[in-house]
Length: 243
Ligand SMILES: Cc1cc2nc3c(=O)[nH]c(=O)nc-3n(C[C@H](O)[C@H](O)[C@H](O)COP(=O)(O)O)c2cc1C
Image (cartoon, rainbow, N blue to C red; front, side, top):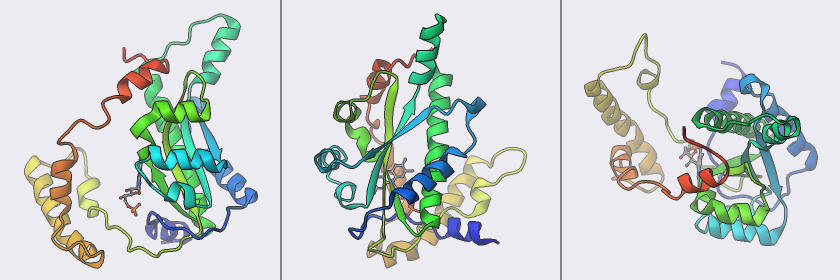
């Protein structure tokens, strides 16, 4: 164990903030730390939009399904897969810029690695964070609001601010569910592991005043309907080709 691992193990998403703003120095430090995440072939296919305009933040609350923390937090960011730089460079020297599933994955993976390094850096400075996937309710609206150009695609948001709550950390699976040797476990062991996780989660749900809830029950319903089916058309409009 060391200080960095302890910080990582103490993570919990923060959804209620004081009105303390996040200083520019801390934002720069966290973004630079984010940039030091590994990036496929050093392509660095991401951009981050710091949304400081109150009216824009209010619009993002609404897009995200009424998540007031988007307005109330000390700083709000929209993280974007940015495939524009390569396209501009290709155009400038007259070569094709082929986008497909691989290039889309590269930019999403790069953005996620950047974001998680950045979140960890904020947490190391005492700030709380919460990812906001809710912006994907309407990416076209996010794009219009932020005037994002072709090939720059918003993926998720992140709230940052001084925590005004101290939530219980949410337990994860036992390590045996995710760390496996030379292959992965049988279906029967997966199901037994999920039931064992529910036992672990009982206490957590009880503390949160949600006794009776189970993780298995939530997951059974999670994929019942296809999630945000409009996203494929949106990403195609941004230049992504699936083959
Ligand atoms: C990509 C992504 C999108 C998320 N979107 C939201 C969101 O829109 N609103 C929210 O309150 N939490 C959101 N979360 C936070 C997760 O619910 C949270 O990380 C998860 O339940 C585990 O809890 P913990 O972070 O407290 O350990 C998101 C997390 C990720 C990684």
